[in-house]
Length: 96
Image (tube, rainbow, N blue to C red):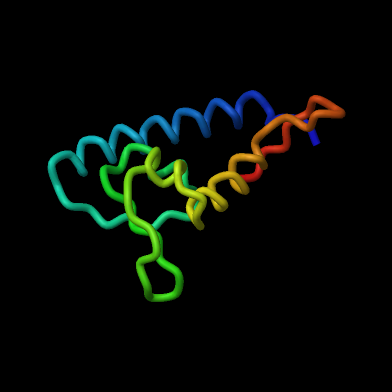
């Protein structure tokens, strides 16, 4: 599967930009609870809590959590690898 059609890619890009601006305005200097399926949503968060069932097992910023060899790092690597080009074909499959 190749990349997205140009119009769809442009719309998704604009939507993501609008969401980032909205989050930045509404979350500035406030305590905000964010539940994220896409870990890239958490990149700019000051404090991330990682739960395993009902127990907090990791805590820190995105960069701090990546330095650990824990659940967050494992999930990050699994998610980000889906967006890397296929080494054999050079194609990128976008999973939305």
